[in-house]
Length: 511
Image (tube, rainbow, N blue to C red):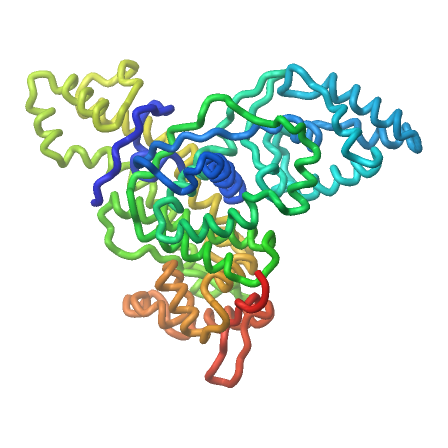
């Protein structure tokens, strides 16, 4: 096992187990989209301070985010706007006065409120309403039931970025439910990648400079002195200084940025490909704890009209991977019994206290004084059960939830979850791996080498040797993928023996 970086001095958890393996933290309730949004908040703050993607010392990230309470109230806590427009139609003066009065009385998260600056910035109240409705239509994951203070608009620029908050009356507090630090892990990964400067260059020119017309429109909704000098966010932790996964992730980001598509169109593909890399990272860290040297693989079913053996294999592949984190927790904690440290505990004069000292030291357990066990073995087992319960709440769900979010995991036409990619994920894979065009079999090999995706018979050789499936089943699976890509306009067959996957956004023209 590679040596882990020291844990942070400040920890906001009662034990250090999940965080020690995967970092602080992977969180199932934070979707891939919200991971990107949190990442952009961190990047914006660090960029303003001249530290973008620069770590003076590992895991010392400290940054400030914007609350943007005027913007959020206008967009998501503004129920009277349409009614006021209707009731005072053709009376622009009354519309503005009534709306400003309502907002001054009912805005959340602010003590002193004054929305009168908006009258000077918009020709009419009706124009203002139309702009608000347009921006609302760009809400991230728009069909959701999140509270108004956890709604986010598309990141057109720096003036669109703000953190997740809990609002109680006129007070606000940081909330880690939807901005749960997974975006901080992403930021740290890219900070330690070999293409971080290229990524920063792209995001600086396209997002962080604030020059886009949509960002300027959002800026008009906010007072000129919008700022935040509150408590800095800290505690982000990524266990390793460098890993191949960081560079593979950054490679795919650059490949997507280099596609000749409108700059905002890249984001859905960026979300999906980032989610995939985070899943692979989480599985690889589990396997490292288990001392499993085999490459992480995913048997992908390209959905067929009727059930095939590939469907069962894809389900088994999913189940195997989904259990890895639970197995890793068990090995990480109970594996201590196989160490010299534990032997010393058992042979000490007071095994219980020795075990308690070891568990507190190794796992930073803060609730050791509440333990009910009376023996060293019992104490370790009790701690393991508590850690397992905690793990099941979020980290154990990460693979399943994020897999479904990015279109990798599906239950379609089956009772069991399995790997069955959607068109949106397949398109992201093409754009991330095909510069212009690539022979189809080479594309399958690339997906296997880079992500561990088993689709065709060449990638399934190890499985075929065990007799779990025959060559024909995987060959037909590859044919179905070829047909899918062709129907999506991403593949052309030139002859019976030659088919090419094509990136429709080739590197030609203006980006």
